[in-house]
Length: 169
Image (tube, rainbow, N blue to C red; front, top):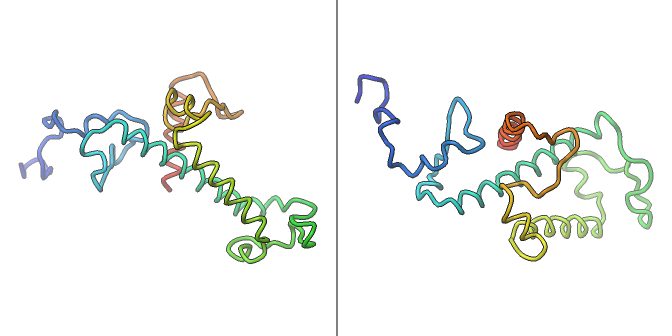
């Protein structure tokens, strides 16, 4: 309307918008609220939103673990012993960061690729993963990590919102 400072008028008047279907979901936080700049949720499809939220949580968790894997050896140190006894490669011989790529043996990369494929398969909705995928909320596979799990719904919501926000960084 030009007078209120909003180019599109009052958001409360747009009650038929498909975006309304997701404005109360986890991850909707100030100052941006529900943010979908590319319009992936414009059709209001709940199953697509659930799949995208599951993928967002999974990739956020991987990113946070990778960050910790990069930082932790700098402060705590590395495992004692051998990464590859047959190659005579100790954990302490592997540098941090991208320099480690050339030091890890091919069999080690193969193990990492197989584990990544296993993690990806866990979200494809087949086999023994079906029950956890279909019955729980996105990202909840029935495992309660110690020190993070709680039965308090407000605290759980706060922690899940923090996980989404940190994964988005």
